[in-house]
Image 1: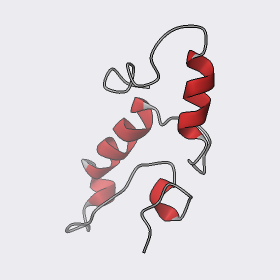
Image 2: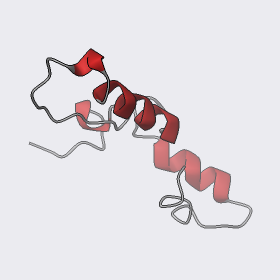
Image 3: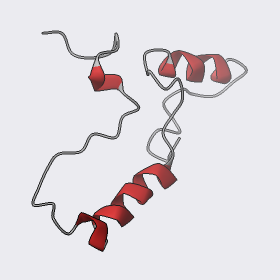
Length: 73
């Protein structure tokens, strides 16, 4: 839950229920953490990624890997 996502579930007593509904279709069943994205960023900026020449990395908790939330095909 980052500042960008913070307003999405709204407020009030049902906020937790709406947050749970938002992650229902996420295979990891939780929101990602900014620290998880930062860890990948640090790795990409390190010597560990010295042989990488380019790729697209998706950090979405598995949503696009085939959950019900994935785009149809």
